[in-house]
Amino acid sequence: MRGQWSLLLGPARLCLRLLLLLGSRRRCPPLLRGLVHRWRYGKVCLRSMLYNSFGGSDTAVDAAFEPIYWLVDNVIRWCGVVFVVLVIVLTSSIVAIAYLCVLPLILRTYSVPRLCWHFFYSHWNLILIVFHYYQAITTPPGYPPQGRNDIATVSICKKCIYPKPARTHHCSVCNRCVLKMDHHCPWLNNCVGHYNHRYFFSFCFFMTLGCVYCSYGSWDLFREAYAAIEVSP
Image: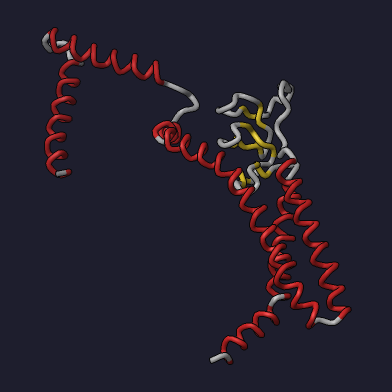
């Protein structure tokens, strides 16, 4: 099918080029010359109305995919609240399992010094996770100052039409420019930028330590439970 279309379009393009070439000559018929002039004038008018010095192929692609971008941005904006609730529920469930299921077992098996170490470290790690997650959610990532145009070398954001300092990017979900933007995190329902980047990194770090601690602390209990399952008929 594509080959048939190419065979049909090839002669049509040749005819159009021939008409344009004949229209540029003085001896061509006035009717043909008028049609060629109207065609060229229409092209100039169309390009003058649609021309943009900031435009290009990337701008055309963005305009074509704008409905998809709008749908994704709105879905992510609403999913952010769901992801935050999911993080809180999962973390609370792990703490509840540790208190209801793991704690009664380790009280009968672990020694007092080992119990003290687990008690202090687990609560210290949990407090740091909760603190840094709360700070990462509630701390604004940082936005460019409004009304400051005294910096001559600063660029302009094409979407919000405001001065954009270095390493500043426009977040399509928040619909604002963010200072030193890293990414928009749906698990925080917030952008990771200049002012909350340390809280986001600390939350990821202590959450990783908490996962390692839970795996290490429950390894002996897992082996005992697995051995009991293997021994039982």
